Image (cartoon, rainbow, N blue to C red; front, side):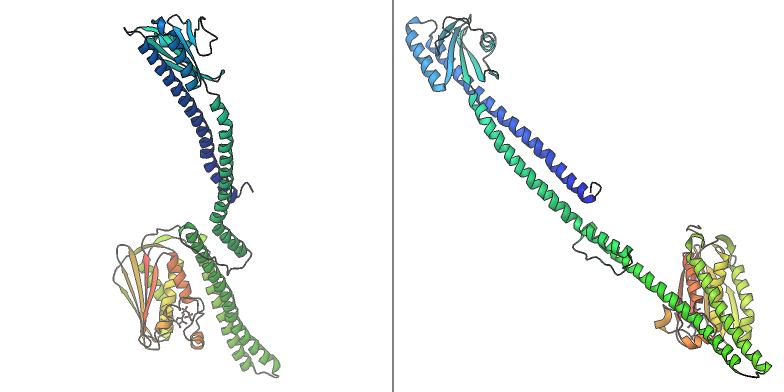
Length: 471
Ligand code: ADP
């Protein structure tokens, strides 16, 4: 569970949304507290300033006759502002107190001292839950002759905070729950397509190769789904090709085996068989065995090339020499069919990196086909050419040719244009497949141009330098 991508995604969503939420929760509370504190402090200092202004203006401290008015004003302002107002002289002796309790006493409050010495001052006393604001009283010469000290309670801030805190906490918890639900939903929605692909992969690993996923929309998942479908398609094709190949091999081997069985049984069932008949039957059996041997040899060549890890033995060799050698070996076959075998070197001394054995087999198959599929007195021509990157081997004949519809199928294993006739020519149906595989292993290409009854031209391109891996 902890390892699952879903959990990791879900957890990341929650983490990413929770951190800002907690920050928001803690900063909003601190900001509200700060706002209230500042608000009460400003209000209290404004009262102190106003009061000190009117005391300075009315000259209450020097003019004893206004003592009563002074007292009334202190009392009125105190009630108006719901705060205690204390008036001190410049030695911090209390002259007036709206509470009346401190009159005549020395009141050494830091704010008052600060206002007398420096500037008007306001501060919050958390322990008393009170705000102290002090503003200096000036005489006509702008000398500080006293201080108005306003003490206001900030109890209301303390009363309002818990309720506010509860409310914000509730909103935060609801938001957190909504975020968790959203994260849960989002992580599921995001991973749903992946689950679908995973389900298909599991099914495929159980052997159900027809699995495909439904591609919705675009993006990485669609790409992944498309890649999966393509891979599944290829795998299914490989499986079909494999089973077709096995059935083809069985079929190809069954034909000569059936002939051998018929031949042997007919000899066994006959009485007094003449030695000449024996010899005749044995020759037929021998030719069927040769046919089977050819098929098996061709199959082995193909299988060796299929095992790509050690498929090639790359060496630098002269292609002209190799082609000339192949032609020399096939000359008797051509002579038997009275076929003219022509060799033309447009470019001499072509040095090529490749597997001599496999390329010799590939070229040999093409020339052999040319001879096989060209009626007597025909011509097979081999042309060797090269540019600075590739070598080109062209094998053309004046034979029966290949119809367009068969041209891209003749490189498939066991594909024959005319099943019965081509079998009679002694072919296995594997020659061009071997050539094709060998050329592809060398990163080359093979093309065929042909028209029925006009002969066929096979062009092989092989890169001169080996760019791929040899192992
Ligand atoms: P095979 O052993 O039957 O010759 P290949 O794989 O060599 O098998 O060739 C496949 C088929 O392609 C042949 O059966 C034949 O029908 C056709 N083919 C190949 N080469 C030629 C050619 N030069 N001219 C006409 N048909 C050809």
